[in-house]
Image 1 (tube, rainbow, N blue to C red):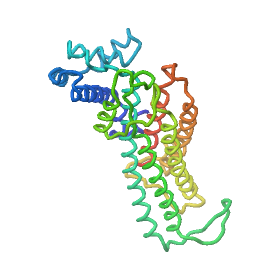
Image 2: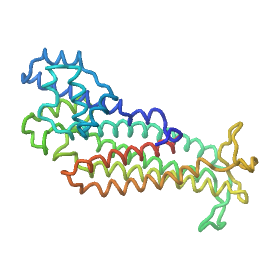
Image 3: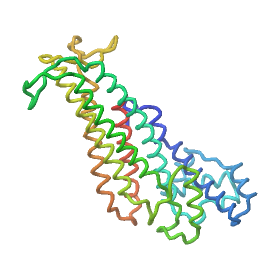
Image 4: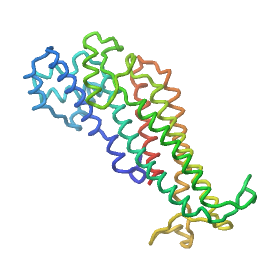
Length: 324
């Protein structure tokens, strides 16, 4: 997503630095769990924690040869750690760190979105109270009906935002799961206690059942929640766009000092924020469709596993823009 539509705190969650740092944290936690169980020397874990590093540029260079991001990452980490790196990633499959990290990213992003939705809810409540007696025309089918109040409009959006907060809170909880279960989820070389330890430290719950991956209906639930929230925001934006039409002009978006509406007609005050919301909401809904299609993914096709990460990344960046 281009920077003009991205809040810095949201963008950082989806940068390589955050992703690789989370991969590293998972790998170290797995080593700590195995050391606590007496499977590997604690002194080796201490060496790993002391020496461990990664270099984003170097990982990209290695991936040019390996054509595998996780192997490139592990190779780079081993360059820093040395012989003790043999304990890193033991018994794990790539999706253990890929999917668990994606859960961490989605959980972190979801919590940020909830915070912004609460701010929106509070703003709508304030407006509803302030304008409870501000008379305006009511419409059905776009045609004048009975008088109503602006406060009622804001109250309606307030209640819908409350429902969206509930939806997002639930789907954020649902996505807060991890797996450290090895190839095709068999725990062949790792105890489930390792998974439990890692997930607990990350604030996640071990997936009740997983295969090679965390099941994609969980991601789909989150993505569809984002699409619903985006649709609510589009609903608000369309109303604002209508009410700002010159022949209606009941409300206007805030127009800052020095802001320009048109290069040819500088007198214009265009509803640019509402227009942006309307357009981006459609992308959110299209990403939800991709997430639904991904539930039945073919697990043996590796690159399919990355669809949800890409779709969510785009969706989250779009949604946070709505809440500016």
